[in-house]
Image 1 (cartoon, rainbow over the protein chains, first blue to last red):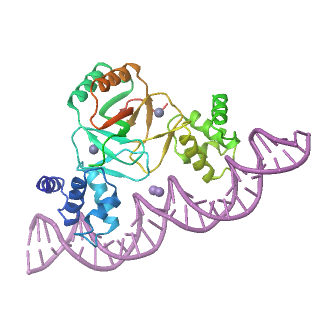
Image 2: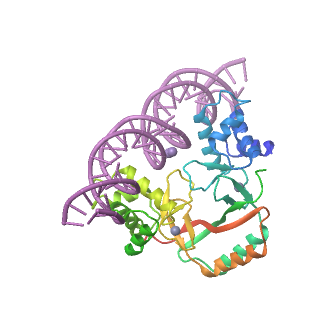
Length: 140
Length: 140
DNA sequence: CCCTAAATAAGAATCATTATCTTTGAAGAA
DNA sequence: TTCTTCAAAGATAATGATTCTTATTTAGGG
Ligand SMILES: [Mn+2]
Ligand SMILES: [Mn+2]
Ligand SMILES: [Zn+2]
Ligand SMILES: [Zn+2]
């Protein structure tokens, strides 16, 4: 996981720094689409002096280089995702909980549909479902 | 349109004020999922003294009362939608352009799929597609 | 081991949004 | 129609996530 990350950084010509590794690692470990603040909190134990600005800058550059994705929300706090594979999101209607939803069968249906039904004046690159509702279990 | 809005306000026990009407009207007319700033800009001609705080407060309360919807984005600037019917969004991969995509056939397919394939530990309330790609026409 | 461009740290600045507090006015009652 | 009142609007300060600036550090190639 971390090895993959180091390789990817080098591939993109980005230096492998402890900060970048720690931030990426935090997002993988936290798993549930954390904010910059969540990341800072998480890595504080091992990196007590990391600069807030650094976290934001690293997050930005990792998104820029396709090592992380931003998650769309209706809040003005950004959230990040280390899962790059094609997947959808379950949004809690009442809290900020967001979880991944992977479904190859669904992806196939949607791809078929849009291949058969082109959208006028629009070339589709990516389709994600935002599935809003209520979780019936407690946070994992 | 505006009549519908006035009735809805009364129904919810909210006063019909010129500001509320102007803000709602702006979002309908602008149509492309404007920000608070866009709304202020738009209504400035007829409401030169409207307070910024009022615009934010009105937007919030209209969302709260289901007269507007927030649009999920990966920016920390909120955007609003007066279209309440079930519809999806086309997001430009390179700009902030967002357009509506309505497709009853697609909605049926998705509903069927999720009725047949329940998600574990999750009760679905609403499903929207975020369709990212490139517009091949100029802004309407 | 050195050098240098790239990255980080620290802290100030920005800016969308929220909060506070006073004034206004919509709308029901009289 | 006028009166009354409470919700709503206006003005402006505060907040807080994010961005910027500048000095300092460091990854990594030579
Ligand atoms: Mn912001
Ligand atoms: Mn904010
Ligand atoms: Zn995800
Ligand atoms: Zn819309």
